[in-house]
Image (cartoon, rainbow, N blue to C red; front, side, top):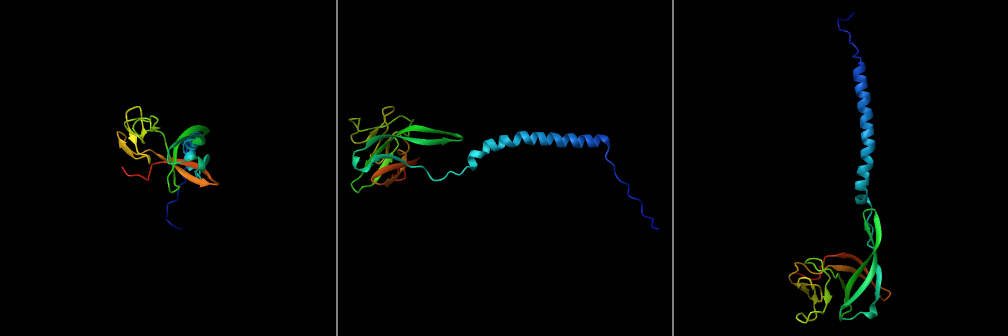
Length: 173
């Protein structure tokens, strides 16, 4: 026979059993409320963005070296909300046939710019709100701190298609 002491089983008291049971149940209930809220907040970030949608806006033969204001509609997704929004672009085609589409939103304070409306700044985009003006390619000349934003452009079947709006990379400030 050995002289080893017998191991005693440690029993769980009623109080410990209730504490474990209530703690587990409370944790399960809390998780069942928190998980859907976290999923709701994070889900748009996990969605596949896919390729940008292009919208047919104008026939290529209607464009010239003079900017044309072209209104169009584009589907916009904001989280869970999808809606069709009315947009406008100033579109030009240079002598070599390259097409550029600029946003009409001034980079100074968000007013709408117009083409060739100010006698003091001929052949330039001009913002009537605070006097910002831009070259034909969107380069900022005064007041605004950045060039006009530019739409992605795709030419297909003799039509101009516009995609996402982004920074104007063709000009340097």
